[in-house]
Amino acid sequence: MTMILFNPPKATTMPLPKAAAAYSLRWRSRLYSIAGLALLLGVVMVVASAVGSTHIPIGTIWGVLLSRLPFVDITPAWSAAVETIVVDIRLPRVLLAGLVGAALAVAGATYQGLFRNPLADPYLIGVAQGAALGAVVGFLLPWSVAGLIPVLAFSGGLLAVTAVYSIARVGKTLPVTTLILAGVALGAFLASITSYLMIISGDRLHGIIAWLMGRFSLSNWEQVWVIAAPCIIGVVVIWLHARPLNVMQLDEEQAQQLGINVERVKLILLVAATLITAAAVSFVGTIGFVGIIIPHAVRLIWGPDHRFLLPLTTLAGASFLILADTAARTVLAPTEIPVGVITAFLGAPFFLYLLRQKKVAVF
Image 1: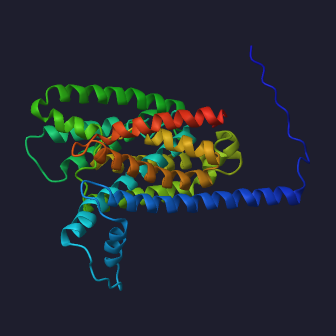
Image 2 (image 1 turned 90 degrees about the vertical axis):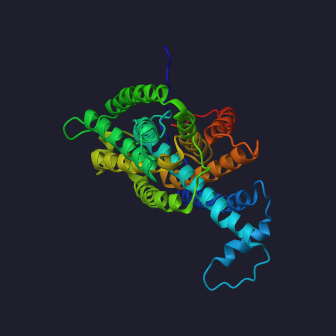
Image 3 (image 1 turned 30 degrees about the vertical axis):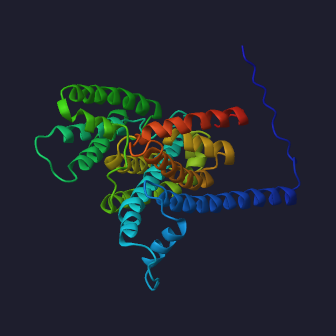
C-alpha cells in the first residue's frame, strides 16, 4: 500500500510584501517569456523563408517583405523570380505551418486541461478519424472539384465530434469519461471504414497516404486565409477561458460552487478546440505529436497556469511546426519527407529529455 503524506501549508510561510514581490516577479518572467517566444517565432519565419533549394539572403527576405507594406518605397535589388519564390511559395507555406502548429498545440493544451488527462491530444474525440474519412471519400469520388477534399475533411471532423458529443451527453451534463470513451469507440469505427476504402482505392492510394501523413507542399495564400479565420477566432475564445479552465483543474463541483458554469465552459472549449483542429487538418492532413509534445513541454518549463500556458503554447507550437516543415523539405531535398515523420522524430526525444530533466508531475 502506498502512503501519501500531506503537509498542510503554514499560515504564514512568507511575509505579504515578499509574497507580492514573488508573485510580481513570476508575472514579469512569464510575460518576458511570451515576448521572447514571439520574437523567436518571427526569426524562425524569416529563416524558414530563406532556406530552400534556392538560398535567399535574410536581408533580401526583409527587403521583399518590407516592400509589400503600404507607404514603404524600396527600390528592388532582387529579381522578380526571387520575389515570387518568397511571396508566392515560401511565405504562405511558412504561415500555414505556423497556423496549423499553433492550432494543434492550443487544442492539445485545451483537451489536456479540460479532461485533466496528460495523454489527451487534439484527435482524442474523433476529429482525425472523421477528417481522414472525409478526405479519403474526396479522393475516391469519380469527379474532381477544386477544394472538395479540404471541405470534406473539415466536415468529417466536425460531424464525428458532433456524433461523439450527442452520444456522450446525458441530460444537461457531459461526463468527461463518457465523452472520451465515445470518441475512442467512434474513432475506431471510422478508422476501420477508412482502412477499407484505402484498400480498394487502387492507384489513388499514394495521394491518400501523403495526405494522412501531413504535407504543406501545396500551400497557397487561399489556404492561409481560409484556415486563418477559424483558427484565430478559436484560439482567442480559448484564451479568454483560461481562468475558468484553471478553476476546473480542482474539481467540477468546486468550480460550480465558485460560480463557474462548468457545462457551458466545457461546451465552448470543446467547440473551439474542435473547430481549430478540424480547420488545421482540412488542408494539410493529420499531423501527430504536436498537440501532445508542445503543451507538455511548455507546462514543464513555465507551469500549468493556463493564462500563460495557452499563449506560450500558441507561439511554441507555431515555431515548432515551421521548423519541422523546414526540415521536411530540406533534409532530403529534392525529396520531401512527410512532416508527420519529422514531428515525431524531433518531438519524442525532446519530450523524453524534458521529463528526465524535470522529474516532476505536470498535473
